[in-house]
Amino acid sequence: MFAHLPAPRSTPPRARLPRTAPATALLPAGAGGHDAADELRSVFEHAPDPTDAGRLLELFVGQQEATAPPIGRDAARDAWSSSPRRRSLSSRELLEQPALPRLVKSVFDFYFRDDLYGHWAGQEPIVLSSGSYDETVFGLPASLKDCIRFALDRNWYGYSDSLGRTSAREALAVLETARSGGRLAIGADRIAVTLGGTAALASIVDLLAGARPYDTRPTVCAVPNYPPLMAAMARRMPVHCVETPIADGGTDITALIERARGGARMILLQTITNPSGLRVPEDRLAELIEATPRDCYILLDECHDAFGPEVPLTPARMADNVISIRSVSKRWGAPGLKAGWLVASPDVIDEFYSQASTTYGGPPSLFYLLIEMLGLFEAARLGGAMDVPAVLGRLSDDYGLNTATLEAGFADYLRATEEMSEQVLRCRSHAVDALDSMGVPVLVPAYSINLLARFGDEPSYRTYRRLISETGVSTYPGLLCMAGGPGLVRLSPCLPESVLDEAMARLAKWVARREEV
Image (tube, rainbow, N blue to C red):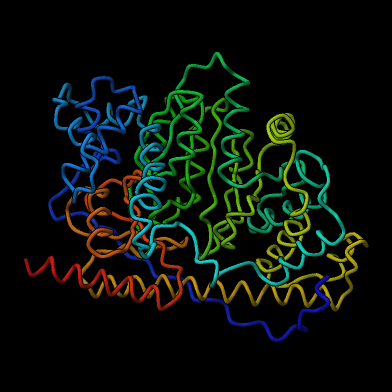
């Protein structure tokens, strides 16, 4: 393994970190109080039954057909037009509607299945809305691909422990300790290998909900958030959404802390908010953990923690009710591997064994070697150097590694890490500069591969419909992140340079035409 990789050269310079900017320009002057679910308010107020997510979706589709460029969904438009307003909802009532997470997930499914890859597929739009990368440009380092080939050649794809191979869990424990800046001493008994972020969250929610079926407290979900995660929680218990707005260059969780003090069954929070790309400060996260009763689990979605400043983690994360969910999909553009891990208390990990073995048996054993080497390589990168003898001492002789081949593998990983970081930041900066030159308000993210921009003052889904129909460029409506505010769309600019240039040129022409009217 790694024998074909070139010998190490001098370590390349670290990628420059992205700039950050305030988000005030993302909302129109004088506007305020844009609830995360405000775009759906009229749908709930007009629905005969506000708990029927299917009927709510029909009304939403009809509303789009009546207010955006029509595309032939006449029956849905007529259903919307014939449905009178039946109620008035306050902001809190809207965010606590039982069907809200299911409706947002239904719109999410409709967007991808029926709209983007349904109605518009034949027009082959430029997709700036994937939430991922173009695989022809971005991908795994050669060293990590070598791990998969090596395992495949040796038929390492049989049954395995439901928590993952011990050596892979030990390597991830080394990584998590390094990620904390040495503040946390994390052992393999706190690690479970999973099928990626979404599946891990759904599995842990099922486990915790099943353990206390008598608990009637709602789950609290910080928004913005990812619709599949919200829906996974809503399947098992009531979900109340709490807004976490942008403030002082980060994500403000003041309202979430206050809600936590009142008690909840679980709390779901992204530590790097998608789509803003801004961090929840670790000191504020420590406040949340301290304020939360110990019988309430805090689920931290950490999957977007990439391409930004490395921050030492708070020791408060070691509380028994904190569960962190990580994935390789965003950092390495490999969502199709479905690989990730949980960090939790030993008791939770022990209980998760039965959940994993019952629902999916165990993670794909073919990827254990990749996960093991990823953990050790990334820990060494964070630490500034690899202790080659120590790493060799913990690796199996079956890997056939020696000092030269291990150093070659690590050097390849470092080069690929720096190159990918440079590519991501270059694409991000190029998109930000292009949007800024158009006069489009844009939030410069501190992390992640996405960015948030505002095209006008119409609701976000209507904005997406106008942009795709008039420019052939697909954007991701802010509604589908529960990001409040008119005209907000998420863009994923990690595309080939020529494709990104064409997308920006089309958007610039659209903005210029709108300004002439």
